[in-house]
Image 1 (cartoon, helix red, strand yellow):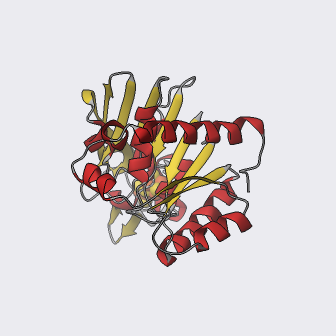
Image 2 (cartoon, rainbow, N blue to C red; image 1 turned 45 degrees about the horizontal axis):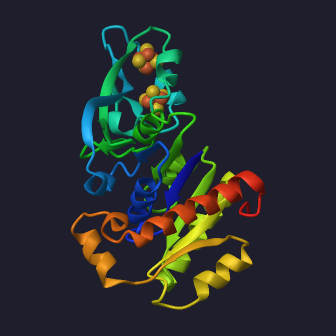
Length: 285
Ligand code: SF4
Ligand code: SF4
C-alpha cells in the first residue's frame, strides 16, 4: 500500500504525521521523502545513509557545424527551450522537459544528448525502516523529474509512506499519483481550510481515497470538520495543541518515542486508512 501524506499548506505538521506513523508500525515500512525542495523527514528519522546517487536528465546539445538553421527543433519544442537566433541555435537547459522531440526532428542529426544535474538521492535505513529522499540541486526549477526518481524506489509488497511537498502544484501531483490513499494534514484555521479545499480538489481529480488529520485541533474553529463532512472526507485523527509535542518537534525527536501514548494513536490511524482502502470506497470522493 502507498500512503501519500500531503497538505495544501506548509507548516501543518505533515512531516510529523509521516515520520511518526512510519516509526509506530511494526511491519516493514519505507519512507520516501518527496519534498525534494526542502526534505526534512531525515531530521527526525535520522537514518544511516548507505547510498548517494546523482540524478541527471537529458538535455539537447547542438553541433553548429552540422546545423542548417532549419528551425524544426524550435518549432516542435512546446516549452521554448530551444530557439534559432540569427546564425545560431540556443538551447535553454533550465526550461527543457527532456522530451527528446528536438533530437527526433533534427534532419541533420545535429542535436545530441547532454546531461543536466537535477539533484541527488540518498538511501538509507533506521532499524527495519527503509528511507529514501531527494535533494533538488540549488537553482534547479523542476522538481517532478527528481520526485519520479525517488518514487522509483517504491518497493512492492511493503507499506510505502510518501512525504509529499506542500501545495497543490505539479510536485504534489507527482507525489500523490498512483497512491492508494492520500492523507491530508491540515489545521482548523481559515488558511488551513482554504488550502485543504484546494488539496481535496486535486485528490478528487486523481480519484484517490483520502482522509484528513487535523493538527492543533483545539485552536481555530470547526469549519474544517464541517467541510470534511460535507465532502464525505473522513477525519481520521485529531492532534490537539500540546506544548510538549511542539518541544519534541523542535528538538528533532519523534513524538511516539518521547510520548509513547501516541504510538497507539498512530497505529489506529493506520488501521483506519487500511479500512478505507481495503473494504470500501467511503473515503473516495
Ligand atoms: S528535449 Fe524537448 S523540451 Fe527539451 S529542448 Fe528539446 S523539444 Fe524542448
Ligand atoms: S533542427 Fe537541427 S538543423 Fe534544424 S535548426 Fe535545429 S539543430 Fe539546426
